[in-house]
Image (tube, rainbow, N blue to C red):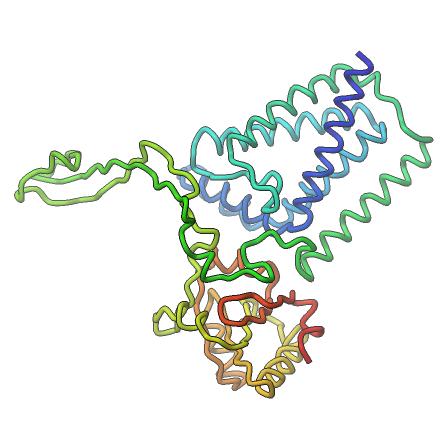
Length: 373
């Protein structure tokens, strides 16, 4: 039993630490995944207000969850605080299993974000993984008396404290700069236009269509093979997936750069055979002290090198007001969907150096001072 418990101890500890570190590389990614769950649950009218409120705290929840996941893994391997650690592990894995089970069985959330964007798992793979972990952790709870500390109490405590400081610093660093390992489709070297295309081996979903029509105040449903005559009034159409396809979504979705007049210029801009900057920004409060001086320098450098600079924001009206009315830069502002913005820019603001559709370089807001001079 001692051998089994300690085998489970190291397996679970290493997996929790690894999972936490992968997510710590990009805390914003986990917070967006949490917001996705909150958004799905908010569609229940009785939970709408609560879920919308919780969604506003998704980033703090993400930071706490990542830190807790790594620290219980460290404590488990070191063999300290056996009782409390084993119970925290059990609570966490029950919570994770609920989330992955909900994602797998409801089909409303594609992935759970268990290993971030670097190691994407399907919802069913994540659910299976958590079920196995649940069994291993139950073994730990039942046999925690066999867990012995690896080192002396002072050394174990010191190692836990150092681990905590490292976890907090790592998350602070990547949120100011950029993830150390960029696993997003907008990483350096990627061609955005190519990644907007459907994969060559895509298998589309098989669907059936159900139509709702109304007549004399009554509604009825019809299949595509049994549509009513023209005396019925069309109400709605529902697409029913009868068989899921495979690999049928492009890596980059909903990335459309629209002018403030609503014109889609994505293809035209990204087809240019020239260098240019994309400056992603949504936060216009108190920005002068944070990045405006660096932005001005980058703008002037771009003019000297004949590199146009374009503003990308999911709040184009505010961007237009800030850059072209208050500060007279006279820059082209492009509107981008809020979800696509979050995927493209993990810091706010963030700068891309592009050559046509290819991302040559990227800088988070804390690195704008290091951008080309």
